[in-house]
Length: 343
Image (tube, rainbow, N blue to C red):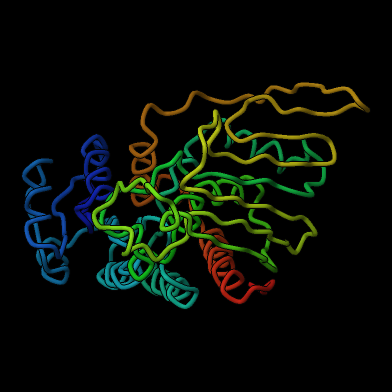
């Protein structure tokens, strides 16, 4: 029997999930929800979803979905995830998880109380090379890891849509909306070290440019998020991490990634070649990795639906989701206070 599935949010990400779910044989999308007038109905008509709702409670009572995908703006993630758990559904929540640490704790508590599975929309985890790297590091292949560099953003391109540029809906800018993906991937590959402190700065360049690129619905005067940020994280194991995010970066051949520095060498995200060191000589080591899935979002849903049916585990663990949220909250607190903060 197929897993009855509903998607909350009919915007860009909601539509992406609806498209992907249509290709997961074990899932049956029964409804889409969006409070914006006409949004859910339009998405349902275009993507072949049987029912569209503007009332979340009505959907949950009428359709009784077993699986809910929360793809609404972050402002609503906690409320909608908790409602889904309380109604007995398993939940995939898009990134960033929510607006603060209290909401993150509440989501986790609701999932545990309901005895339901939880995961997040982190498609980079579907990289088979990164999975092989995670195992290689866990087995001591890099020796002691002492630092990780994380960077990412867009090349002169603010995210499109209605909400990414408005902090009251989105939690933050480049760090919350974009860096969150590669930050999660780095922490996951490292085995989720415990973050202790964060020191960060944030800057908004867009409203200071004479001819700013506007790719979203609205104007520069509505922008309340950062488009550049830098952070330094210290972990309980003595290692550290530097994080750079930029929505208005100059053209570059590698706009997003991470590299892990260990006492035995360096590993780079997405690369099957680990650069081990023997004195001053670089000794390449090739990771054994399966081919990537054709579509990472489809693979993400297929894995989680299998876990719901008792055939595997959820990709994202509570501790990992909370660690990412703690770092993001720490970045914004540190930048606002102008000092290092404990997380």
